[in-house]
Length: 359
Image (tube, rainbow, N blue to C red; front, side, top):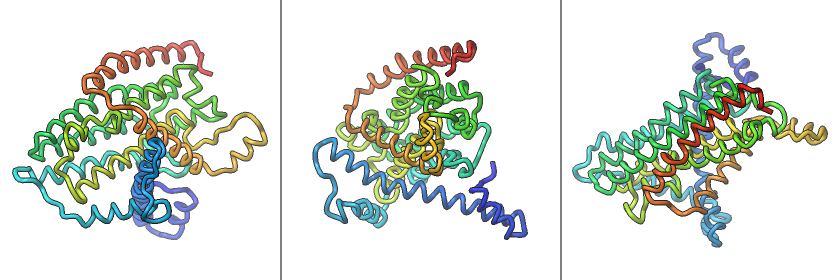
């Protein structure tokens, strides 16, 4: 679990710096800066992208006034949030109130550190990365529960309880789907999961196990959307019912941290979907030598970025296409459909492995 950067740069640091401890520290600082750049940079871009996707789905323009086609609107909103006064409502537990948005930001950053952006571009390679990601995901639930409870607001408390029930329930299906990939690939390391999909696109796990792989991918989309607290599963916020839900009382930078966590989580979940189902940083080879040779010349991190961008677009289309279900319908979907189907999926995967039917 040592922070690492691409080998050529890492070797250069070790050759120039005489002390291993100092080389390790420099390596770690560069890795932290890289993760922060990916997280914060992508969040700013995705807020603008979300507004434009929403606008096109709803046949309107979206932000247009600040910058070319409204490109500076997100920057203006960020500056507004940074300079707004931050205060807690009367009767709130101020320590926990301000701690909650910091806790909720912890989970996506830790998960992002374990994502392999390329063969030599990963902050932390762990042989138990997937179980670790499942464990770390619990921080998001904790932040929502603490934020809603500490706000001394009935709407916030109700939103926090809804969000906790939803995320804990869908965490089960989310974890089972990741464990399905562990079972099929034979490893819990994200690098090895990616390596198990080497070859052409038919070797990606979405296609490698006929029908079952695609079904697992669709179920991952559903359960991860609920985990992200994004529409149509945003019952923890539900502005029409709860005036904003668990973060009703938050403002300024405290609210910005909740908002930022949502988009970093979106990047992390999309990256996890790409690693587990869409071949990670591997090129989409199609079996035609000329095209495959050209695709192989493109660096892996570019393919990874394109696949993540595609997955983010899919999540955004889901958000602006489907309507929000009732809370009882949402819970029924998990306990009466997704969970039983997940258990059958794992059993079917075991059958495929036992009889050697994996393509």
